[in-house]
Image (cartoon, rainbow over all chains, first blue to last red; front, side, top):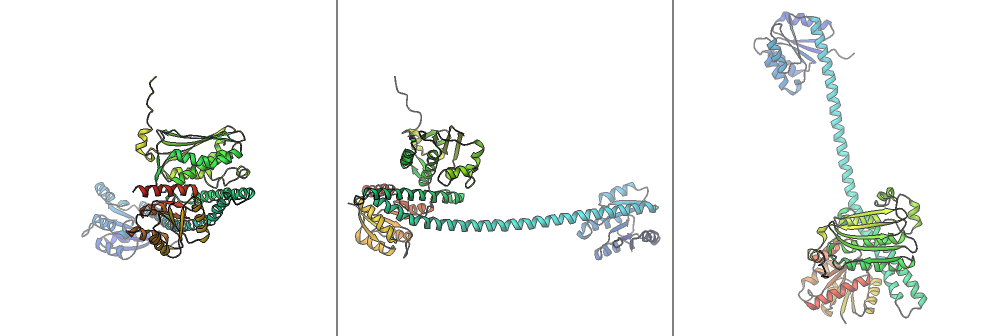
Length: 402
Length: 125
């Protein structure tokens, strides 16, 4: 058993204090007595009690005044107080409860009732204390967890900065040797002094170097954070961009016996975009369309000016994708079926690259695919990316008189 | 035959890009670092400068800044070259008043397009 609960009896009449005190002591409580309100306040300020039995009608400080002061002091604000009042005075009871008394007993004292109410209040206080303790522990845990998360966030931010620095260095270091590979192989490949065989070797090295560069760029693109993605916007002529990208893919298309065509109406507006990034995105889509296709198939690129903005769509007659596989293909490094990625050359980053670049421009990647039929995937740049002067040119074509 | 000053510290790259430019019909002169780049620019008065921004002694940004600050050389179009694939370098180039920017390894056809455009613009000015 714990220490006995410590009760303070406040009453100006000694007889009342002693009768109640003796009986409560016999019931197992530790008892202190105060002869008036001033004494009660002095005692509760000096030590802690478990409960106060407070006479309501006292000379000097009245019960209501004592109660008000107890409630006002933080140490005793929640101390259980049972007031002792004359039977008839229901107005006193209401006043006391309103002022923060926990319960009341009436005079003359019916001791079993007092005992029951004291025990009830003590039990209630214990439960309340337990709840408070739990609450405090919870708050402390929340604070500790918050601190933990703050530290984790700081660590993540620091890691992100380190990653940026690493990517910047890696970008430089990986691309530098490719300078020589790509540049010299092009020189030899176009050198009349070299034999036709050597020129062909050099052209193969050149093509391989370009592919390696493409892969390095794709890895860097998906590894970058959003903030690092958004490049400087310059006016980009969409027709030239499409033609250049398609030209670069023409040889691969021919090797795979695929037809590659593009449609770029003269009315297509120029866009404000990060030109190398946009070209990289379009090449990624074209590369996929060629890769996941069948001999005799078709790949087409179309630039369209729509209400949603500029749409660069690549359509193929290839193997298509199951709809449940698409969300995974849009996330880097998360191909749903590794065997698919492995049966086709490349890193499988194309859709992620295109999506990240489209989103970095405030646009989006739209994708529709049917297994065994083909895929249509479009980079959509928002209207604010279109250059106004050309938007006017690209409006409804004038009707030609019959 | 336009004269191009190629400022590049890597010998292999200098040789390679120089040969490609010569084959494309340009008169090419070289400098291996920032101070030499500034000296050659003043001595040779090239029609255009290709500036690698990652140089040993004095980086290409600083050399570019000084060339643009000097009345003798401020009108020479400069195309900066970097092996970083990050777009911030392009913004930096534009802020310094460069004619253009490209990434290494250079896509030669693209770079030549930029060279021709910069020369045309400088001639018109």
